[in-house]
Amino acid sequence: MAQPKRRWSKARTGLRRSTWKLKKPSFVECSHCHEPVEPHRVCPNCGYYDGKEVIAKKEKAAK
Image 1 (cartoon, rainbow, N blue to C red):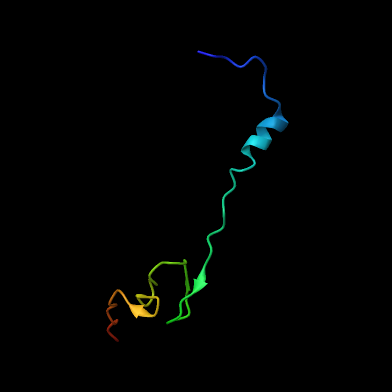
Image 2 (tube, rainbow, N blue to C red; image 1 turned 90 degrees about the vertical axis):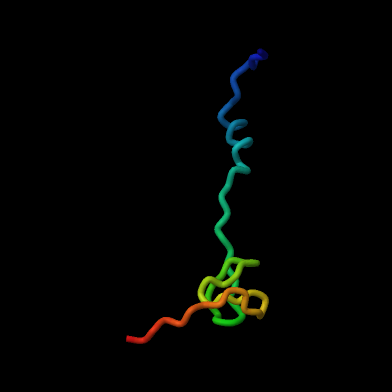
């Protein structure tokens, strides 16, 4: 198996790893309940997506 002839410098290693960044998750406002939601996902709070009800949510019983 081939072996490297020389050791890579720390700067070269850092340049190679410079693209390994994590991104912060982005959020948009739900058009129905105005809660923060990930883009292109059904709102877990109200069950709406693109102005239409996709998941019917049960109402919580009042005590």
